[in-house]
Amino acid sequence: MPELLLIPFLFFLRKKITTIQFKSRHIFFTVLIILVLFCIGSIYDEFPIYGMLSSSRSWFYLFVCMFAFSTPNQITNNDLMWLSFGSITAWLVDSLMNYQKAIAAAATGEQYVTYGVLLAVPILCSSSIKKSKYLLLLIGVAIISVTVVFAGVRRLLVVLLLSLLVGLLYSLLKKKKNIVPYTVFSLIFGAMVMAALPVIRDYVYETSPEMYYRVFVRTENFLETGDSGSAGDQSRQKHLNDFFDNFEQYTLPRGMVSMKTKQGQTAGEFNDYPIYQLSWIFGWPIAFCLLFIIGLVLVRNMRKYNKTTDETSFVSINSITVMFMLLFLEGTYIEYPYATPITGLLLGRAWLNSKTRSLIQ
Image 1: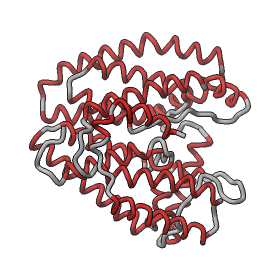
Image 2: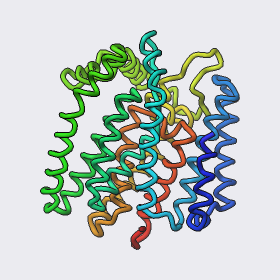
Image 3: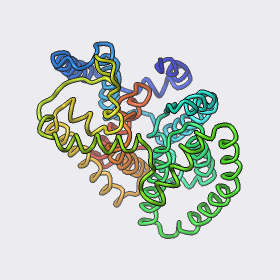
């Protein structure tokens, strides 16, 4: 129940949280959408009721937060930056606590990973770059790098690299004088990695050779050859091929999904390829229209940043770019209830920022 973690914020940040407007028409519209999709899913009868209810809960949070943050409130970019820092720190703590479970699973050939909020990464990277908080950025990148190892989530490394690449390059396009601090940051981080990596590798190898192979060897194989040799990666490629080979079957909406079918089989393709999940739920014509609208929001934020170099546009550009990349890699940001509020928040703020000339702090 991740909702329990909201309780402290309701007390300590109540003045800011009360400025978030949850309008009745938005709640009604969201409930109507979820109810229709749930009914369609029930008619197709592919997934258990409890599984579809879980997914409905996640999509409800996403839509409600998107609508709520598409109107002005007092939640600032600084708030989101520290929230994201807390999120990645908690992810590291959680992964360290679960590391023994990951070792035990790896010994039996199974996979145990500790998931977190992936979109916290582009928020932290872009905000700290924009605010020139390079020490915070360095600490955050170090935390995320260690989390990649102990959580067993290699895709987190991809998100980190893309977030840094988009943030640093887009910042340099507007302020070429930043090349000096960015170079210094890169050198310091590189030195830290070179110093810490052998120690971490040795520790992981001693505690679990299977975990060492899955995290380090497969990553090295992918960087060298483009193929990690992982059965999971091969399965992802198969799912993608099957999706495009049977593209016409997803023209009409099939309603709400679940991570397991009624026969108990894992529907991992929904998490591996969110674009597949979107096309199943809404039908590909509606899904592609939604992605086109989000693409327009991204373009408008780019135009606004080119004129104002504001932080909200900068965060929105980085976050939405990562979202589009994750369409072919990882679906937790639209599937898990602890992550979808952040997804909705980012989409809502990007939408609000794209339609107003004023700067959102």
